[in-house]
Amino acid sequence: MKGLLPALGLYALVMNLFGFALMGFDKSRAQKNARRLRERALFLCAFLGGALGSLLGMYAFRHKTRKSAFRFGMPAIFILQLAALVAALYYL
Image 1 (cartoon, rainbow, N blue to C red):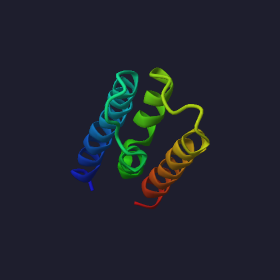
Image 2: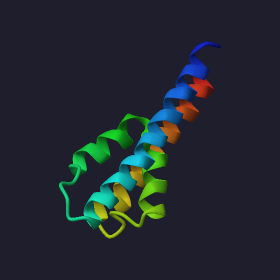
Image 3: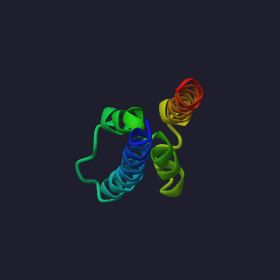
């Protein structure tokens, strides 16, 4: 258990940084009218542990904030991940 927590923490850090960077990258591509990332890629990153980073990236870069799927979906994924973390810490 002791070795698992630092590994999960590192994984979460990397995924959140990646989610933040993806939002910035996609915003940059949008401003240049270049080929963009698929929305499912942004959601997949969030779902795999980068929800907080993706959410922060949305508002830091003002990207996808008008789309209701992102406005409600990213916080929902984050809340589910937070609930899973609390449950895991409580029961393990």
